[in-house]
Image (cartoon, helix red, strand yellow):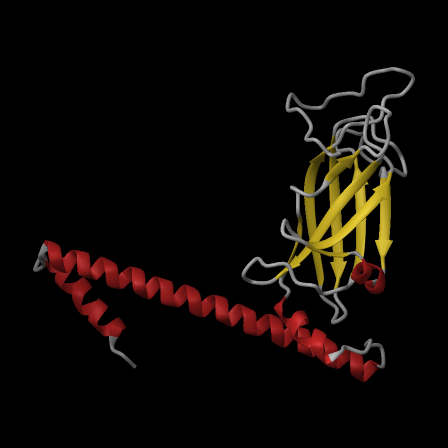
Length: 224
């Protein structure tokens, strides 16, 4: 051991007795910050190891039960790296595909991410659910979609702007309000589940010449 905790205890004792100088106080504060940073880094590393351990245990149990899909070697590292799911709100929203007023479809960019917040190309089973947060409780969703791992893989986007699984989804039920709630659920092949939610802005298609309802004073972004 490097003796750092002992030195800190002695320094704290000196501080309590008043036998310290301003320089010693600053040095003690710096050492305390360094110690806190080291403990935080160790805790994060421990959490990462535990996550990988739990994923391996689930994979082992599935193999023993004869239910586990084959994990290719090139995907094993990706499985261990993914620890969160994100909806890229910059690339998600309504899109107008014709000359009629309002958006005709929903564009969604889903990103499994690693500990560094970087997108990871790891296909999994993806479920999307679009709802109106202002609708009465118990109302049906405006749309729900489910994609198998192979379908996700085919929709991977890698560009200068962003990376992720890109979906263009025509309305199942056209929205009547400009602010909607999108929920995403992503199941990996090793049994982990990640969820993400985002409020998105769209331009509802006008019906019978009526103006769509506005749920906020903020102008919806250009989805076209």
